[in-house]
Amino acid sequence: MKDRTISRGARPLILVTNDDGIEAQGIKSLVTYLMPLGDVVVVAPDSARSGQSAAITVNVPLRVTQVENQKGYVAFKTTGTPVDCVKLALNVLLSDAPDLIVSGINHGSNSGVSVVYSGTMGAVFEGIIHGIPSIGFSLCSFSHDADFSVCRNVVERLCKKALQQGLPSQLGLNVNIPATDSIQGEVVCRAARGKWVSEYESRVDPFGRPYHWLTGYFENAEPDAEDTDEYNLARNYISIVPVTPDRSLPDVDGRIAQWME
Amino acid sequence: MKDRTISRGARPLILVTNDDGIEAQGIKSLVTYLMPLGDVVVVAPDSARSGQSAAITVNVPLRVTQVENQKGYVAFKTTGTPVDCVKLALNVLLSDAPDLIVSGINHGSNSGVSVVYSGTMGAVFEGIIHGIPSIGFSLCSFSHDADFSVCRNVVERLCKKALQQGLPSQLGLNVNIPATDSIQGEVVCRAARGKWVSEYESRVDPFGRPYHWLTGYFENAEPDAEDTDEYNLARNYISIVPVTPDRSLPDVDGRIAQWME
Image 1 (cartoon, rainbow over the protein chains, first blue to last red):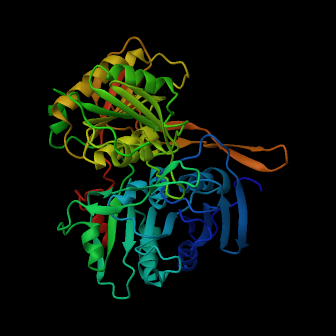
Image 2: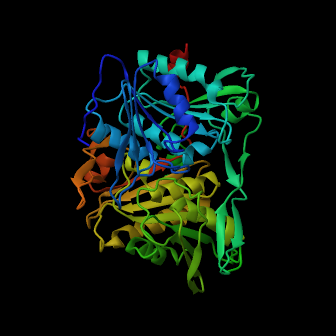
């Protein structure tokens, strides 16, 4: 494989990744919806990388294998995380920056605090850092054979808009879609605060040694807040949350300066 | 090992973790500085987990092994990420919530955009989500045998302050310390924007197959901004950046609503 062999043609160049792995139904559906909008390059993990957040691989080298090479659609699987996939695309595979990065469609919601752990959204943050319009899509169903067709309309519309007019600087979108045929509309909102609780199931293995398996549920700290994604998703609205990779908290109310005194 | 055997005694309970692994000099120094302030419980990865961001382990169970059991100081190594370590402490090991979570001292800076990828800071975000005052410390030197003693004063002072009066809700601190004997002071500031560039070294392995190893350097997009961590660290000031796990971007200037129209 030669480096940087993929360049922009006459159509927009769209980079697609996910965290469920290249074989997942969600990314296959996403590619189908995006191919009418531009040339699609998939660079995705070779297997599931759920919960990888913005993790990068530093201690071992990465492998990249081409698995599709059609007109308007090429695909590569990698041994890396979702963020590794974006970095490999931008630094090794593409000779032009993509016009849009789309991540997903995730199997399961990335609403509330889940955005912190999400590999799907890790890839979106990486795209924003590189100044590329970036959107993550998640379907609120963990079912392996979920019906992704309810996502088609919003994927097409938001991605077309982002290709036409970009996205505001330092901003990406986290889009969660209820798994229902009766979607009520779309709401721009913020992530509900809360935390995952009762998080481990502790057992003893066949050799008498304890082990701990991550489990639990999301406890919404503000269930009545109408401007949150959780509130709107529960009412069958698509939630569109503007997100930023910036973790700094501006001291708007002076409470930090006060604390430091 | 029985679950939840560690409870708060008469002194404050301080949870310590890192991403360089339990054998790193940085965490050993940190424990030394914190032991005068309270009872210290270390729950840290069994080896280096750099670049793990807020990654969690979902596909395999985790193991926990106790490695220290002194009065006022117990330590466990785990097979998980820094966030896994915090979750295991809160859900499996501790019967009382800690009064403070301290992560580090990281070998190498976590300034600028590095906070996005940092496992050290992933643990801090997890602490904030659980409503516990949380601080990450990093020494701006990748040297294995760096001199951490320059960190002692700021670690002691900020941790004592956080134990006495907590931290404002939904806020943690990302503290970077220049590796110098002539520290000029401390500045509360924000993370410099920028990105890592030239990120892969591509080579061919002994079997003729290509591989790609992450490398590169941080390109500061705003080198003249005096209110950033990079600017102040370069001038030998300790940078204290208030951080939040919230990834939502409030639509303060209406540009998102405008985009959606």
